[in-house]
Figure 1 (spheres, one colour):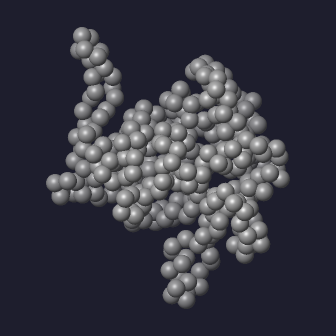
Figure 2 (spheres, one colour):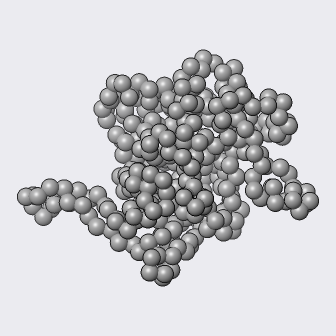
Figure 3 (cartoon, one colour):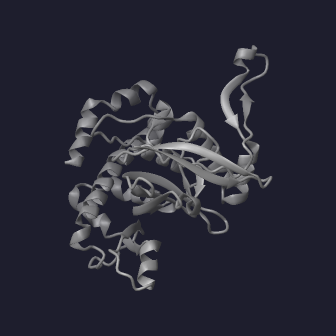
Amino acid sequence: MVNLMCIRGHGQTGSIKLAWKTSQHGYRWSGKSSGLGYKPVPDVSVHKKARVGFSSRQDYTGEYDNDLYREWCEETFDNGKYIYAAYKNIAFGIEYKSEAEKTDFWQTPIETDILKSGDCEDAVFLLFSELPPNQKNAQIVWGRVVDKQSKATRPHVWYQLTDKRGQKFIVEGFSKDWDGIIPVGIAKKYESRKPMLTIPHTKVTELASLLLDANGGQAYWSLINLLKPTIDVDNRNYLLKTKTKPLHFSYEFTGHIANTQDESWTPANHRMRKEIFNIFKKLHKMFLRYDEQKTEPCTYTQVSNRIDLKQISMDNNLRR
């Protein structure tokens, strides 16, 4: 189902900017990003020259720059210049590429950068790799997105930022425009996001190290004990009003042992445990390749050959 959305953003001039998008709903982690858009500044982009002395057909690389958007990123977020550069690279340098039916192969940041294509989790980890390791107020989130108009639900992976004032933003890189860093408060008017697993940016390297040492299914279950349960805001508001509503727990990787008898792990959440188990298993495979690629540079041909039918077939076994 295709749903037309409009997000309003205020530019520096005070005028309202409208970003119209269409959202295609799917049901895999590899689904395309939301069709939301938010323009915080006037839409002014310029081409960047490649080098002097070439003919007019070769003067431009096709790479875009937007000084106002860069300034907005720098003023809004810690390490804003890195966020701007990483977002620009994905928005204008990486093509969204859907995967074959029933496949969900997670590329490393190096593979995505070489292939110049990928889907939502590929863009998320490429963004992660281009930000400083100590980037605070940033998270990778697995969850589900519910369209408030159509009620359609789809799995999704997104990057979440918190600005210097505490306002939360989601990053949807495949926008092909300067409108993919969107305030959560605005997005909530059109969709509801239900987080399942959150990994703080500063904890990704720690989790990768643990996954590299994992040697079987029991190791993944042990990692689940390093998750801290939280109740989402909507459920907390219902509790405060003493209204009955099924609790929705989400889980954050903390890096230390949590309460293994936590009441949030109820039989009703068994499916969620299994999904997190499979996420860790996929991350294990991805981080193993990434660790190798950081020490042994690979070519486009090598990456293309590595993502072959045999690996995709092995990856599909995780879904059974």
